[in-house]
Length: 431
RNA sequence: GUGGAUAUAGCUUAGUUGGUUAAAGCGCCAGUUUGUGGCACUGGAGACCGUCGGUUCGAAUCCGACUUUCCACCCCA
Image (cartoon, rainbow, N blue to C red):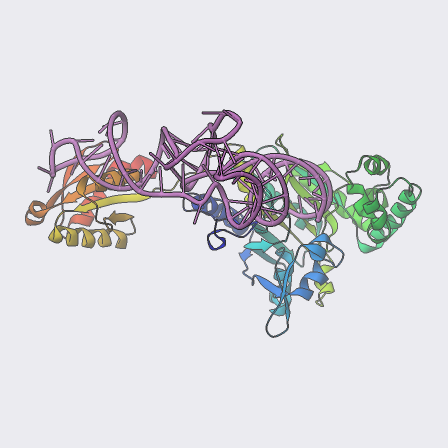
């Protein structure tokens, strides 16, 4: 395949035959955000590289090896966003949105870019839906956000999805915990794998995540974050849990959920699909009370999450969830002969002006071929116009489902008559 | 980044121990009483067999490199 007709590794085309699926889920996501009082924010695809280093964290995999970074002609280092939180936070500060009153609640659907080894459900260009809340310190904010995700999955009809919940504490209690981990794992230094050894000092919480048999066995008995939470963090976490309980949302407290982005504090969570073949994290998020300050803003306790849209669609497909196909054509009009073709052109235009979908021939097909085409695109009605129809101002409107034909005017009354027939025959479908 | 698999029309695949014009189904286009769709039948277009190089008289088939996609690890959405 020539390079000019080959898409770049890790990218995907969303084709006409599939785009309705994206539109469907995007509408549900946006609506749900709206019910919770969120408003959409749109930020640039690229930002100053420093923004991601500062917010996502210098030591994270995302920053260290996965960013699409380049230098502009003006000698400025730019990075394609690897996630949505940083850009939204930057926009909040730059436009001082927090001065309009708290909380600030925004949602977005964006493309994100990470230079990773591509495979199914892991693309280099992928799409996220995210929601961010700024200036809300109470645990009810956490609970509400999680409720919103839960509700989204319910509306989409997704089953077998589990909420994994944890608290990684605030900087104060986390420091104590990390010290405890260093002490614990330090006793096993000779047995730990290389990666774990190198992480022991920098980020000991990572060791809990190691898949190596030896390390994971050692990690089993490691102290958990929860034992080290300070009073405030513990209260916060208990409060979130009890609110989730009363909301009837099931969760699994999993002390091993360690998010890979540095900005998280206190509550962190993931929604994981538990369908047999492989478990997939479809949503991840949590609280990031220190981020806004870290970026030079005021103390603004905040939280957010993101859903991976490709993964969402993947899970829906695996679960056989059917996404309704939108109807593609209300009426197809055939014009035979120059005069009739012009008439078809005009009628089709008027139908469109009335907010219905209409098509007529633009490729020069014969009558029969046009009928086949009309059938293929799922036209609800067809109508054939020739010289006779023009002189009588009448034509036959065919219902393609039933095959029945009705006489209809093709003068100024056309739209009204068509509308009447349409509503009559498709009323059940429309309701 | 490490290890493993994969690659043939738009799609799903066949292609026997290397041997002429690479096959089928679906899809696409056209036709079957030329003013009427779905079904059926007939025909047609469409593939430098992932790319480059090597072995050979001869390569889709054997070898190598690269690329792609997929799987595991890693990480994450």
